[in-house]
Amino acid sequence: MDTIDVSASAARAHQAFNSTDVRYPAEDSIPAVFRRRAAERADEIAVVCGARRLSYRSLDRFSDVLAARLARAGVRSGHVVAVCVRRSPELITALLAVLKCGAAYLPVDESWPEERVRDLAGQTGCTVVLSDRAEHLAHRFPALRAVAVQAGTTEPDDPRLAGPSRIPADAVAYVNFTSGSQGRPKGVSIQHRAVLRLVCGSVYTELDETTRVLHLAPVAFDAATFEIWGALLNGGTCVLYPPDFLRLSELKRILVDEAVTTVFLTTALFNSIMDEAPAVLDPVRWILTGGEAHSSKHIGHAVARYGPGRVVHVYGPTESTTYATYHPLRALPSDEDPIPIGVPIQNTRVYVVDGNRLCATGETGELLIAGPGLSLGYVGMPEATAERFAEYDVDGRRERLYRTGDLAYIDVRGNLVFAGRLDDQVKINGFRVEPGEVAHHLDRHPDIRQNVVCAHDGQPGRRMLVAFVVPAGAHCTAASVRDYLAARLPAYLVPAEIHLCPALPLSATGKVDRRALISRRTATGAPGGHEVLKTP
Image (cartoon, rainbow, N blue to C red):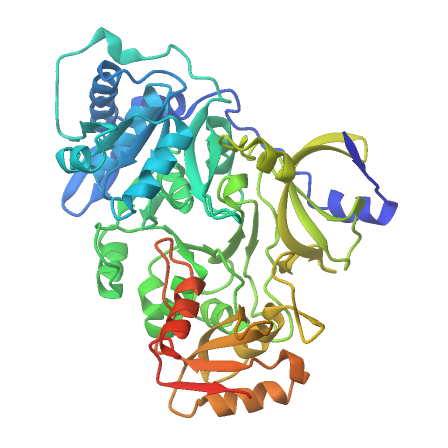
């Protein structure tokens, strides 16, 4: 076990925010906690989707019935079951049914290529898929046994329904796949205990029986873990956005009609709402947002409109179960300072480490995360797991830590501040460059709504910075943006190309799709935009 050297000043800096222990059902499972909530609130509404309402009693019963059908299909404790269901009450029923069998669910999107789905199934040993289009899935994936899910189905009681008498807290609840640096997706296995640590005794938002959480994220995106279980394991209501394309007018209607109290929005979606229709979020009590670095301009607009404390910046990699830190925005941010990612959430500890040394206030290092929210590791990838997860001695405390690859520092107020990625740093003409530094200055441009800065390999042997900019008005030109940056940054930090775009493309998880931007640029010279400036 490696040791991390700790100075007195570094110890004080970390002790100030690492006392996060809160009581939660650490030895329970998701089904066990849900059954208690269902017994307490049997006739209260658990799930809303349009005109459909599902009570806790009905959701418990329907998921029992589906669990029995899964058991008859051979699903047992420790198995992995693919779930390919559109956002609907059937989706929630399917997830609960899998968990009640003692199995883990593997979210699958029907739009994914067949080769990818076969790869994920092969990595996890998955042989059964639950779907609301079972016949179609059976045709596409003949190697998987397709089981239909219908939330309103009732069947006679089945003694095989009960499944395991007790599901261990350290059993795997679900597997989410993230992109891998070698081109092969990595399956992140998340335990029941990790989910309960996320949603029970929360300090980053209020989660109780009055909570009504919007479920908007694709289920394959780990934000769905918070949206679904944050509501149902606290006796609240999960309000589902229909499984169609997001429209702000429809979003506003749902937030008002269903009295939604809590939403999570990716940074890109949050920025778009702030630019186009900030009134959409007026009815919501808690606005959680994160996934990428935030701009002070958009956050400042939000704080001014919604008031102090309603917007919470959250941060966390999939490997730490959705969220690891939080920062409520209580005052207008300074243009000069980045938005902090804050302090650890409950039952989570974080460390800023440079090499084998714990960093003091103001020192930049890699952000390491500890606590029961950590994943078991990557399915079938022991070397990748060992590279990212390891045991350390930190000031006499034995910790299993996840190395995030994110750089951070502790500011003078005791908040963690994101400072880029270890693998984002690039060399251009011999200079070390952080694209985030350029993006920070573009965020402050009064005529720019959104921006992304990427490093790209252009001509052979020539790496360059490329900026993609969404202008706020006709006064913004690529030339004016270049002049703006040239007046503030050394020449090697001014992007070689500046593309003006009508919008930034989003991935299925709501984040800016950088690959799509670069691929469009490579194919057409301009990513669907109306102006591009190239510096010789």
